[in-house]
Image (cartoon, rainbow, N blue to C red):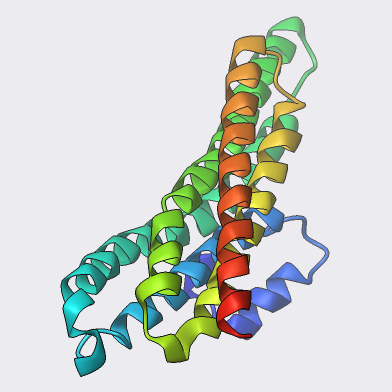
Length: 209
């Protein structure tokens, strides 16, 4: 059974077990999915309200964008755990002779690259949420401002968690070009998301004064 098909309790039980997967990477993707779901809730509590008729088309457009991001992030919850399991499978490959050692080394490198790409994709997907969180804070149903605020902080948690997982997996990769490219993109994305979070969280605080 996939992680996303588990109940909340079942997922938490697996997370709390002595197995290293699922772990922080899957939780980062889940945090992103929860952020998107909250944004979707705000758009749907704005659509159809007379007070917000002038932005209904905008909210419907955001709703469609958020729905697509939610699907992507839920897929990444399982992909992150699958990638980790592939790393472990590669590490367990036999290494008795030189041929086996070489094959094992190649397999570990490939698995580590995949394990870095998955949270990087989580980070890229979370970055697409920035204009959505911004819009629901600025234009969404005012009664949902705290929900939008929680979405912003979940977005930040998702981004930080994904970035951590990219960087730790890069440590096991010998391809210097791959490492440099992934690290540069990770730093750019986390910087952009963090800046947006600071601005958006300040807007939420101001609305609650």
